[in-house]
Amino acid sequence: MALFTIDEVRKTFTNGEVKEEILKGINLSLREGEITALVGASGSGKSTLLTIAAGLQPASDGQVIFEGENMAAMGSEQVRKIRASKFGFVFQFAHLVPFLTVEEQLMLMLDVSESKLKKHEQKKEVDKILRLVGMGHRKNAYPSSLSGGEKQRVAIARAIIHKPKVLFADEPTASLDSKRSKDVMSLIRDLTKTLNITTLMVTHDEEMLGFADHIIKMSDGQVLQGVGIIVEN
Amino acid sequence: MNIAWKEIKKNKVRFLILGSIVFLVSLLTFIISGLANGLSQDNAALIKDLPSGQFFMNEDADETYNLSRIDSSIQDKILNNQKDAVALSIQMGFLNDETGKQRSVAFVTSTDSKLFNHVKDGEIVLDRSLEDEGIKIGDTLTNNQYSGNFVVKGFVDQKKYSHAPVAYISMEDYREIYRVEEMQLVFVPGEDSSLEIAGLQSFTKIDFLNTIPSYSAEQMSLNMIVWFLVIISGMLFAIFFYMMNVQKMGLYGILKAIGVKTSTLFKMMWTQMVFITVIALALSVTFSQVFNMIAPKGMPFSLTPETTIQLSVVFLIIGFIGATLSGVQIRKVEPLQAIQQGEV
Ligand SMILES: Nc1ncnc2c1ncn2[C@@H]1O[C@H](COP(=O)(O)OP(=O)(O)O)[C@@H](O)[C@H]1O
Ligand SMILES: [Mg+2]
Image 1 (cartoon, protein in one colour):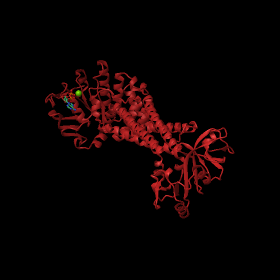
Image 2 (tube, chains in turn orange, red; image 1 turned 90 degrees about the vertical axis):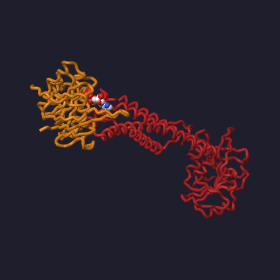
Image 3 (cartoon, chains in turn purple, cyan; image 1 turned 120 degrees about the horizontal axis):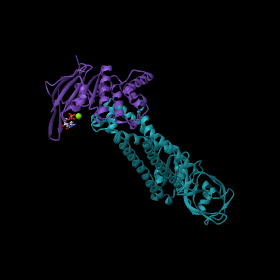
Image 4 (cartoon, chains in turn green, purple; image 1 turned 180 degrees about the horizontal axis):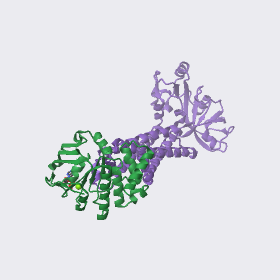
């Protein structure tokens, strides 16, 4: 069964007088534990679709069904709760909180997701995830002293520390060089496979497609039919 | 996790600057308010420190106590009927000390009352400020219009009128100096101010203070300065919190995106605002009270802890409103905007 279904989602932006339909009835579903890559030309509506799916902005029409419930019909507080506890986010930039150490970034996320763990258990969990992303040795560092790749690894750690059901990643490697990009992608792949996290990822980097289980191509606000590719890894 | 506190710890300088602004502005307000109050004490402590009550002067005195002559039969009637009522007169004048040095004083005389010092003929009781100037008990003082000598009997604290020290003399001596039989004023203490007496005009304490020309002008400008300062500092707080919040919009957006509640962000901002403001105010209250103690004797400065606390509360409320108004943006910020705007 699909964990996440997007059903006839439309999005219209109004620029002054001009109405522009950016998403023209999107249908797709994410299969549990798989990485779905969203590809397409710049401006085709990938980010818009991803942020609607992630509950970061509302759709103009259609349904976003997560765990059997339509998020499009929920109030903002309900959506926030889902974002906080069931979703994880990685974007082009790490967007870390500048005044928190690496460890504190993750502790904050556990707080936000209302983790039931006790303090010392939380710390243990943080240590574990930081080791997984290879940042165990920098847990007391502030973001300003980390390199781009290191920040992104911390962002990934923050996105999964609370064991989300779905990970949303919008060009997570766009700010990294080719080698770092591959490291980060294989990290995302390994982590989501170990933790059974379903992933929706936007990328325009051909090289990254090798890490996906499933590729969906978008063009001009629509999903191109018949190009759903299952990648055998 | 207390992110409010974590931010302060990491960005000490920024919060230190904010704190010093609050500190300096509130200290300035306290000092000016201390001066205003000090001047008002210096101008009219004699009247201000009386209990609340009604002042009466002649209706045809044109609200000028100097021109008021209260008929002695009316005066007797009031003094007999009203408990603790007292008739008094005040006139500016001069005293010469033994070296011939002339000093400006406010001569005050009254009927028997515990509100005013009573002295025998030929005796005088002075405001403490004259003791500080070297006059001692037992000294003899003279006045051009007075045939005898005044012997200094004692000193009283904080009795000033029209910026001059008060000199209590007997009614007999007063009559000799100013050559009038009648008293200028009758004061009837009490919360109730409904007493009416034919031929006399009634004043509350504040109203009476305002008939002293220098008093109302002085107080009006000083109070104006104090309230302008309060308003300006309020705007200053608001602008500073606003600027801090604007700088943090990206951060707020990210925190919202990962699921932090808007109310948590408000609490974060309030915590920081209260923390900074309370410390800054505590410091400026302390500083102004220290200043109150060490201010040179001749400087009319009087700042009670109550006044500083009151002003502090006003500052706290203003800071809170300023922070909250600027916090409206926190509500508005869309997590998406922050993500699209790139690195914070
Ligand atoms: N908030 C918005 N208001 C108006 N137009 C928008 C907004 N967000 C995105 N768009 C437009 O929608 C189109 C698709 O954008 P986006 O989803 O970011 O594309 P992609 O991620 O595929 O490059 C673009 O033309 C963009 O200008
Ligand atoms: Mg995009």
